[in-house]
Length: 464
Image (cartoon, rainbow, N blue to C red; front, side, top):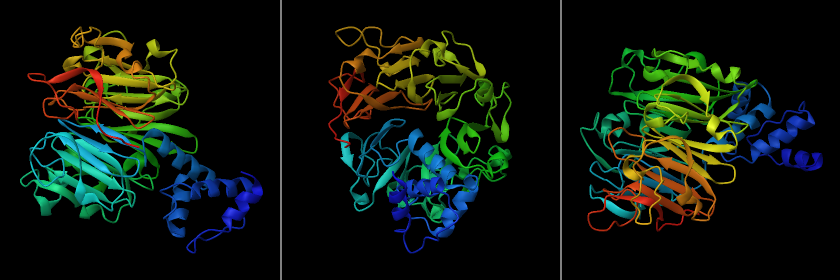
């Protein structure tokens, strides 16, 4: 953009914008770029200035923060979520479909009946959804206005819908305790729920007893609590929840960094020990590796990061080879996956002892637990082959190569209680599914006595 264009755009700001005539041309250009981001547009002048100070005092740092958030998860783009037994799909226009297990009303259709094909959640008409999260028997959706809708069991701590699952919510309900927070992402662990605000603040629900997440509360606490400590004044661009821990990707003036908090068993917090952390703590190993984290993923018991240079790091429990280092050993600090040294990764997804990596050219690699055929490595013509074998080092998912589509997102079940299934979303909006499908979570009708799909099959839904 030329300077004249940037200047003209600057003077076409909304009425609530307070101009700063001391801005340099580079700052002016950065502000103009910020103005084009979806979550920045509706902010008031006061909110923008607050964000500017939180990011380090310049519009260039604000732009860096906004772009980092867009890069690490599919904000305002189509997406598919492979939850525990049920699935959520969001189109680029914000329409939501759900299918699979529905014993707690987690599909949002007003019933508790299973759905074997994608079904639109009609009660959301007129609301554009831009993010989704799925946990065991529960679902959260986030609108482009930053509102959070929840349904299924546990009700995410909302007392008016029942505490800890004593009452089921079968249609999307606005989470009242979050109405004053503009939310951009949600992450559901086994004992807690976390949300991320537009300004990069992290809030957590429920699992606060014994100060496990930095605050002392009752297990069924209904109010969101800010995650303070080291993250109090640090803007976060992405959160990821494992079984009993939380990762936060932070954007600071000196670069990107990762913080962890929660249960440290297996070394999954990344600090070189297996002790718990009651307050967020910086994972220092990335500085030693000279790696700038750009995407984080929290599996049930292990974690992964993609660096700006395309390197992949994993750590935590190494069972079934889910760390990709050729063995089943635990790693208590992030370790580069050397088998991917010739691959430039752009996306990583983790589940229960399972990991997927997507390269910049759309190739997909997977490793870890082969149960439920969720790794996609089915080589026999009858679809059986060795699809249940564990994989100790990254292997190209050739079955996805054969669809002749560039994969842009992988989602897999992140639960120790459910058989896993996997989604692969392509650049053209096509969705492919494989793995466990006994509850309809693949969105595909299975033949008699069949409970899973070993090869990717296209789901009848257009996510463009």
